Image 1: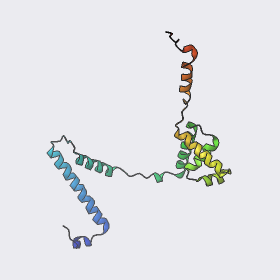
Image 2 (image 1 turned 90 degrees about the vertical axis):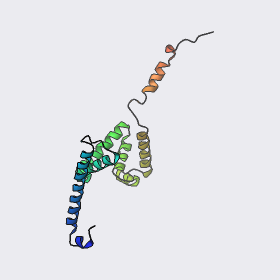
Image 3 (image 1 turned 90 degrees about the horizontal axis):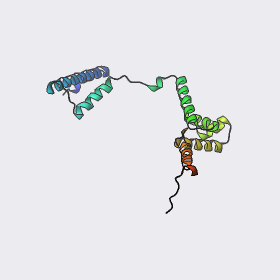
Length: 162
């Protein structure tokens, strides 16, 4: 065990470097022992697999989504809102209100921005959410049309009389 006197003189970066170096050496030794114990076939137990996954995750570079320019974020948000509005077949008011809501504006702020009554914005957002939740499709009415065609009088089998 290392006493406080031994670590008292080290600054934080030296101590962190020492810990990282020790961790790396321990991981390499664990890999060597694992290879020797299982003759190179390396079947992993749950614990070994979790350790391997943890190591691989530590080697991956960290990405930060906030590094994307705001212009790109705005474009992607606008494009997603357009796709959502077209696939749900929203009206222009519903699409505009939804796009502004996706940008984080409240219903009151949307009403002020597009100069319409607050209640109208709330109804438009509610209708847009309902349409999106119902998973609309270009083939919505296809089943009904098919069913009505198949069940037309001309296609029915004649009833058997006994």
